[in-house]
Length: 116
Length: 107
Image 1 (tube, one colour):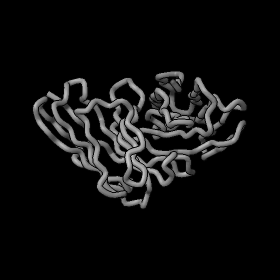
Image 2 (cartoon, chains in turn yellow, red):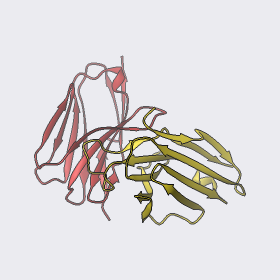
Image 3 (cartoon, chains in turn red, cyan):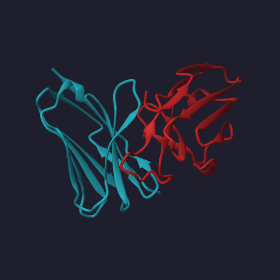
Image 4 (cartoon, one colour):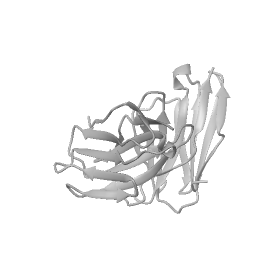
């Protein structure tokens, strides 16, 4: 375990479904992030939360909706997704909201999402 | 916008050979981080470089930050099968991950 726990590990959903991804960090970090990792593409930053406030939204479609109820938990609510949204969704946390620390980002194991 | 490119995209070496991946940014970076992702795994932080021209070593891994703070390299001496994975650099001003270099090591 990395200190960042993501559930579920795998998710298959239809295009009309609504589902949520969950992330929990046990490291006392102040910032949490959602990343999307598709085949043959760089890691794409989706959302950044610093001290529970959203500080960045990288032009992500509205069918992805983040929620950060406290500094330890982060959710990604999904609805009416498209097949091209199939990817590995990674949650990360860092002590410094800028991520500039000698410990970097701590990533969770990810949720492998398949949209059918 | 800021872009971080890595070369090569893929390299297959024989165990014992050396390996180098290069990271190039279109803009000057405040710092750079390196991550390793094993097949089927998640990125794991390796190191951060902050100073111009900085060199850091971790056992067989040597990390360098360019003088202009626009490029970086990771060199692995005498690769082992445990080195298999994809190596990413991540550059700041605004954190942008590189495209990654996938390393395959044959015994």
